Length: 411
Image (cartoon, rainbow, N blue to C red):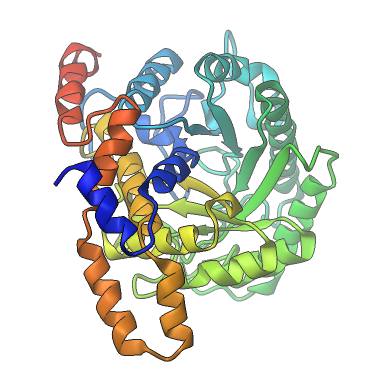
């Protein structure tokens, strides 16, 4: 079937494929830098630790800023559209001496801003509350030690200033996401105290003056983590309550809930009470293992909700770090899969299906929900890819294989 034929078929159910192509092109997904080097960063030779880890040792990992930037460049060249890049604070570029996290300034991120300017991409940012000696007994902002809390409060404040710098320089609002690994391996005797300390620490950070039109703070919950299996300070309920009361955004991560929970079902509630939804797209397998996202039911359901409620109401970022396969291929596959599921949702006659639901026509709703899955979305995707100078199929893997042979495997 050709694109023109697919266009006519979708038109019969009220779908304008040209509009879908245009709408998909306007969605900027924030691609996470940490997939490129297994959440290593440029502060030390140590790997990810303190509640976070990667598995696998595939060759070709980026070990310098120049290598990571080159890999990001190559990955973005194989993804249709213009997107964003999401940085962690541990990816600051230090010259002669590593600056500790509580002393970070925009200076360590100037090379990233210059890189982004040349490519016309926006930047998002994250404080790094892990892989550091001041993560003591699994705690940072909720530590009972005032000195430890002070260090991490200073880090959070420094990161707000860096995010504002990025936004001003790139003339694009910067989302800054706060995720802390704090928690306990076994059942705690005091659940309230750490949460009170966490809230107080965050309050001290957010008292810093920053331009709320340029900086978008988000706060991420988690069910459990490595070494904090029994209790996480930043549980879903704590994060929801804190974020709503402080007028910042709570962030949903698809990998931070029980595998039986439908994360897509949470989106509408978030939108109602926060006005916007910050969303990390990931794929848990047994635990929060952050596998590369696939075109599965979970991703499809999330994309449907995003499109129904308006893509402009969402901050979409990917979040996984698979070190068992080619890291560049993991980026490209994940980004294209996200775009494909968004397109499928854009090609669904949601208004018609909603009308059937409201009328109680549940048989027709179910039948059409299933039948519309077989409509030729692939032809529309192919047209979208071609208009963006990309091959719609799997031939992009040949380019990655050549890059791997010529660049990655020579590191």
